[in-house]
Length: 298
Image 1 (cartoon, one colour):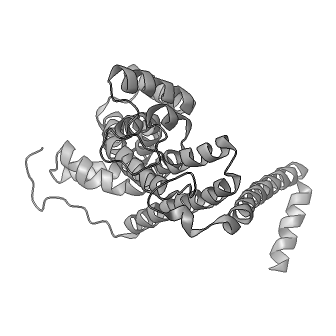
Image 2 (tube, one colour):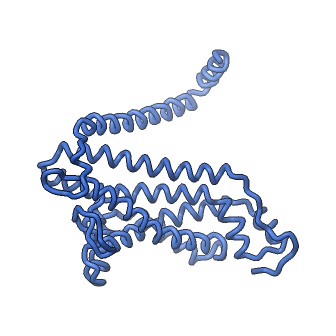
Image 3 (cartoon, helix red, strand yellow):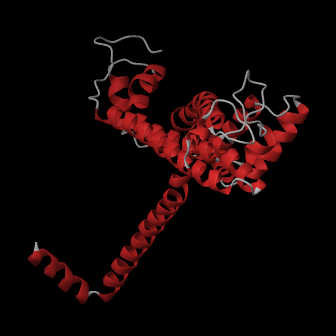
């Protein structure tokens, strides 16, 4: 072990440029890890002592400022947004990667537009949702208006990551499937998509993180009512919006720190669950679901 370290050190000393790059990389990694640890530690130190049972009562009031309705709203909003965004995003990526002609100008324009939409601030999506859904569609501040707005917002992430996952699947998979008589549609759904599932789930995890932490877009579309919705047209308050409202009022700073702890736990829990699912899918043995004899193309 010591000899290998000494050899690496001698090799680095012979190349000062390589040593400088190595030191910069290590310094950047140390700063990133230290910043993350500091933020998490600060939230836990300030928030954990302020956690109490009154913060988890079913009904919200100005006395208990319960976050339980907001936790439930966050889970509902996340699930509804994914139900809308994931099928549209995955099928769009399938078209771009499998059906569209490679090198087409239309595909190039779509990709540039998609990357541009991914960089638009969330407040712009919120204003669009307010004008198009809340006012023009007459949905008012509602759960469905917030979910549709968030679905539009995370679509570029899902499309891009899914397309990259599909393009990473070797062409030999496609050629082998076609050679055994499977058609295009069967190849895509039986061979390509299962092989790209871990990459697709990575995009979904990124989308979930943005959905859970979103505030600006939901204030303009979903509203700030701190109660469990009775229907899709009910106004709701997610956990991140709840945190914003507590800090904005300036009367519940301690409860806001406690809410930040719960929000951190929810985000970590959802990401861990998604990562576990992706890991199980990637470790599962893939058996090509191909016809045993030649069949007509689909």
